[in-house]
Amino acid sequence: MHKPKLPPGTPDDTEAAFYDALQHADIDRLMSCWADEDDVLCVHPGGPRLLGHAAIRSAFEAMFANGSVQAVPEKVRRLDAGASSVHSVVERVEVLGDDGMQHAWVVATNVYAKTPQGWRMVAHHASPGLPSEPADAPSSRPVLH
Picture 1 (cartoon, one colour):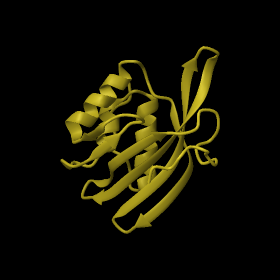
Picture 2 (cartoon, helix red, strand yellow):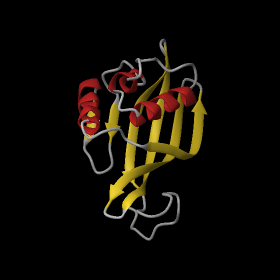
Picture 3 (cartoon, rainbow, N blue to C red):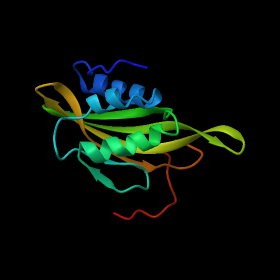
Picture 4 (tube, one colour):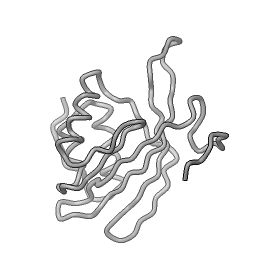
């Protein structure tokens, strides 16, 4: 098992550590990526809004009970604004289906803040993408807002 390690000095470093922790089901390392704030939030595809460390940790522990999450960020777009950075990513997630291993696409927004401890995640919001192609392809689904 990986030794918990705090991410180095950039939002990209924190993002890399977050996805590496997902891929290795390393809850301590994953939680070290989050800011030490009461109002951090996380939304998994189709899930409720999770507020605070305890709720976020509990949700990831439940996920890791089924194994690691093979999610790889692709098509990263960054908006850096001084002490905050917003990353829009398309996650390629490996899922086991009836026909073997397949890819699912998730559209996620990761928000990072520069804290006294370094860059930390303050929000992760993910939504399902299209089932068979990258999530930034045009969609015929209705837009709700």
